[in-house]
Figure 1 (tube, rainbow, N blue to C red):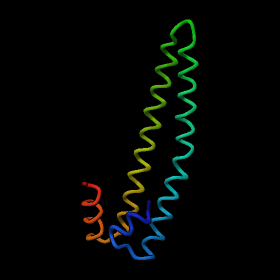
Figure 2: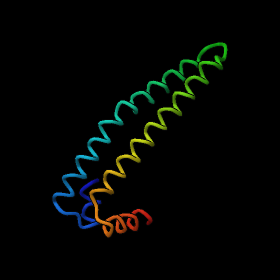
Figure 3: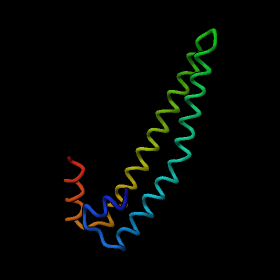
Length: 101
């Protein structure tokens, strides 16, 4: 992914290296969140199998899911800001244009 975007914005080899470190850090930070979301889905399935609806448990899972989504959003925002700091204003403009479709 970094290689594709780096090509689109004419990134230097040094910028590519920095962007790769940022992307790998984001991926490593988000893997545990993905695992927590998968586990939550399993708990939802188990709750739905119960003869009686446990509304409190479902609400707890919902709140947990929202907190995880917020964590993901914050980490992605941080990664985007870190990547933007590596790029020149012209490269950021190219990237924005590239993502605008």
